[in-house]
Length: 190
Image (cartoon, rainbow, N blue to C red; front, side):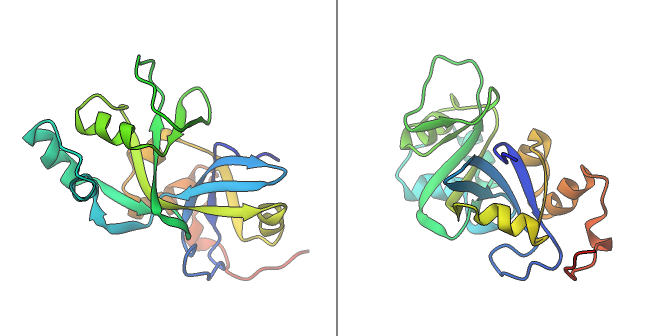
C-alpha cells in the first residue's frame, strides 16, 4: 500500500519519545522508503518569530500579529535545521522553488520564497511549517505497520490545517471510527 497523502497515527504502545502519540503526514512513499512530517509536535518558536529570525519582513502589522499565533512543528528527527512548508496548492501564478506536488490540492516546499510570499500576504491559503522531517528506509514503514506501531487514514485537510495540534492524534483516529484511548498498548497477533 502506498501511504503518500496519508496520515499515520501512532498506536498507544509506541513509546519512542519522538513519535509517541504523534500524527505524521506522509509526503512521499516509494519502494525506497518514505518521508513525512509530524504535525502535532509544536516547538517553542512561532511562525512570526521564525520569519523574524530569518530576516523576512512581514507586510502588515495585522499579518505579523496573526503569525505570532501560528505554531511551527518539529516535523521529525531528520534535518531539524531545515524548514518545510506543507501547503494548499491553489491555482496561482506564483510557483515556489523546490516544491513537491503531493496531489492536486497539496504541495511541499522548502524554499525561502514561499515564506516571503506568505509574509507578503500572497502565499497559499493554508500552510503548516515544520523544522525537520521523519524518514523511513526501504521497507521500514511497512514493517512498523505490520508490528502495529501505526494506524493509517487518508489525509484530511481539516485535520492538517484547522484542527488544534493537541487534538490531531484523537481526530485522526476518529476518522477510522476509533477512540484511540480505548486501544490497548499491547502488541499481539491472533
